[in-house]
Length: 287
Image (cartoon, rainbow, N blue to C red; front, side, top):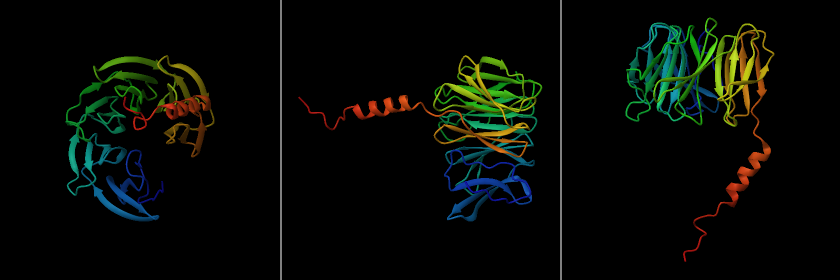
């Protein structure tokens, strides 16, 4: 995706579940606003400016035509990008900056993490792609800021959250009943979390001391391997569309690609063979 700098600092760029021809960035000179840009043959065109927050916008999360923005003022706004009157709902569940936002894989829940050590889970409003204004759950068990959030792709009701330096824990929650499933002390600041699409594994990104990425077996949370190389804390991680590669961005000003979840070729071959061998209903005769 093309990156276009519209201010001295671009705090966040969102495009995970939206049309790949669009993304968001803060408006020039107004870091408390979000701006939609369109890429048509590499020509930049501003489509919409969406404001309403008094602090910087540091995190974004897409769900269909709704984009949620989390601000330093503690608010979350649900923006309908199709409408000039874009503010669908304003959520006020945090007392400090919102530093993590993530929609569940089935689009039924939005998780938010804040510098107030809180994790809030918001329900979608009557099946709509935006949320209600009252949190379904509010979790306060972390002892530091929560910016690492990940939803399990094969268990959409399972949420993983990671705490900062004073906490260092990865916690797993069942959002159906609000119960804590498990908590693991990683011995290091948790900066990012991703579930694998190809294996029942989880990758976490860390800061002090080792600035590593760690792959865990799920749900046992057995440490598989530490991926070393960054000399500063890992700020962000992202996964390739096929789920095989993870990219990490560090405070050491480097981007690193990790080929850590390559699908098993034998398993892939078996799945393709099973798909081919499945008889077609159109070819079956009626007797």
